[in-house]
Length: 138
Image (cartoon, rainbow, N blue to C red; front, side, top):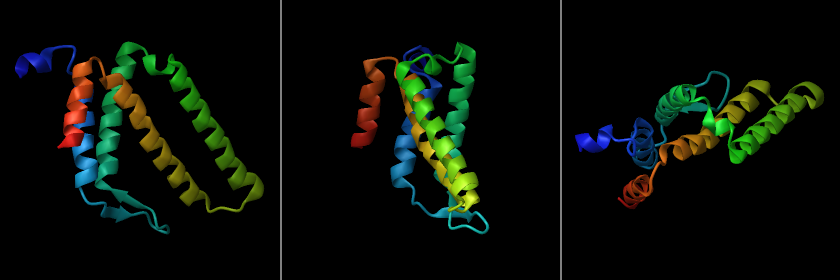
């Protein structure tokens, strides 16, 4: 196992994805604490996702942001930009939403979609995909 952990095929992002695949479906969705003045709650999985995203960000900085050079990455960033412009339009032009709730929902959507980049960066061989499939099966 130690030899596999040192190999290029198995990296820290793979461990993060496996941890997320195990933790998110099994751990109850009970809120850790509520955001004051809203019905939005911060859950334990949000901290785990943030930690894995932090590891991914360090990995991207070390390798020169290869996720931004991919076509799918550019399209997802464009989608987020359009969502941000829509959010700003709703806050400042139409003024028909509660700004802090809309911003929290927008951040939650970015949080969930950003895991695509983490999973894409963690897959280096078919062995990673098989490990993820086994974890999902269990």
